[in-house]
Image 1 (cartoon, rainbow, N blue to C red):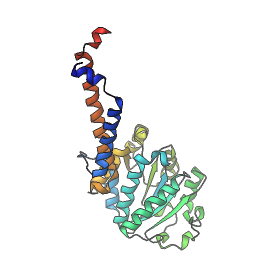
Image 2: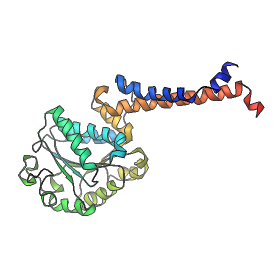
Image 3: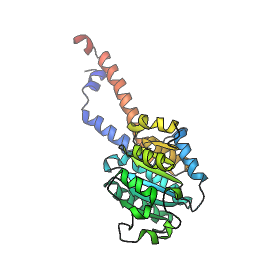
Image 4: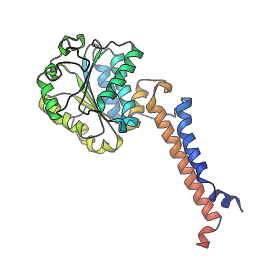
Length: 278
């Protein structure tokens, strides 16, 4: 049996092991490949946050579920980290019932890391059913839609809400979503109340939202895991603290291994003469 025949008879479990190692090693070791130049939509959102003043208010909507965490959770960590580092007040909401727990997790972890205080530097208002009616209601009064926080505190009494009544007092709204909710924020908060909006989305949604970026209805856009890695790069994060960079590195190495295997498999197939026997 020739070398080519041996390659063609290779137990597929070795291939599975190789893919598993290609994915696991960058994440375990903290090794990140070069990310290249960040995309302009990511840079636009980053620069918008950089231009805000300490004490400004940004609303963050966690409108995704655990199934979209691999792409959207790194985005949320990067943007919320940036906001808290800049001493910008963060109001977090969710129109997806599964998103409220994810938002609470992001804020709790970053608050512990950055010494941010709940109720002073940020507040998690949680899930409120109603979709577009919630968005429209906050255009009149945020505290009327969210009179209390999920843990029972009166929203209007929190220091983080000082001077905040509606969208007129919100410098930016960032929606992290895997579904159609960004379109609702654009239509009802952006068009009705002139709210500045940015979005963090899964990669498959990008083509649907780029027209809104080009029309100016979105001021910035983070596209999938690649966008999360770009934002982390702009923040100059260490790869150990950058799940987007590590995820992109693992993905790139695994894809490279698959390409090599496809090439080697085709060479082995033709070199072994099996194509003639068929």
